[in-house]
Length: 423
Image (tube, rainbow, N blue to C red; front, top):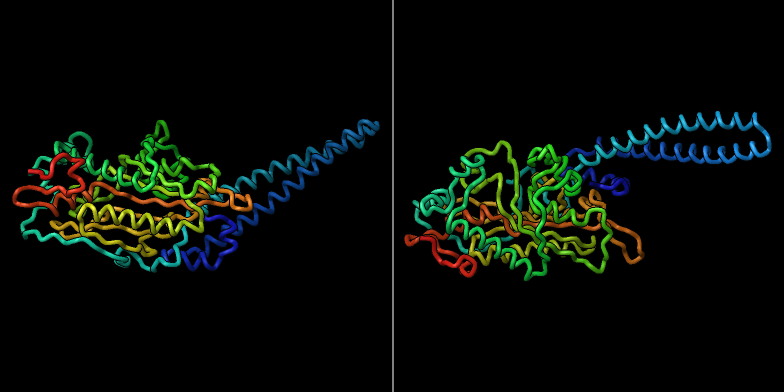
């Protein structure tokens, strides 16, 4: 969430920046500033009245001591009127603050200056790419056929138990899934990330803190009786560890990692592009989350992007990194790099990670701050990335490594799987 001061100090720049998102912010920004002026004016009036109440109340005591009963009664009547006026002002103040908050949460983050303008995925820029494209025969099988052939994943059984989008992993499919999770966690720990095991349900304050609420409420599973939400990513509970916290600047960079199951309703997801593992309602992911100072956050972003690149390289997958355009940028992000791997049998690129810098947008919602060298509190910058999401990684591994003898396992995973081929 943008701060009022940021909006006041950068009025034109914010409006221009949000145009990259195809978001016309001028009207709402003017309304925000008007409501803020009303809020501050009302607060000033209220403060003046309360000060007058206190001063007059002290005078009443003096009148009684001096035996000036008539003056005391007049002052009492005056105080009663002031208190009635203050109640009206308190109502007006609460109303202005609520309306202001409701407006502020509808304004997305301002894109970084390096974000290209664009309407959607077709306008994203390829930053770099690598890996060797597999040379598969024309009749190469997609992963959903391979999963059935080798009895790795049962999609129909998942439909029986729960519904579409909840696959059941079996045998070597389950072992490969577990191997990937452990491989990603071990690599994260070796790169300085502290492993966390978070809860899978969060309260509304946590959802608001990282920006899932109210923006993505329809995508989250809601346990209504307890008013808890199943997490769409471990980013939510991990980042909320630092909600309402003033961190020590000497602790920067704060680097956490977590494995979790993730739950997303993905309403309206149909068709061939979401078949098999391409889009699920429940999936596994290892997340990395960083908290840093504003002056170092983009260095941290580069570090995170380079780290995720090492993972896809170790898995011997063809990969590319995209710089997202304004129209494809997430609501809370200032700059995002997407990782895609090539699925040879489907002949398409599959997104497997997003690495983002939110600057102070989440931190303002979280009230996550640090003390600068002058001991003044400042908002931190938060960052997160998938390292990595498993379903499409697994899909690409199965498809790209199919051979007449079976499915080859990348060398780095063999110590984790205990086998080097699925046959």
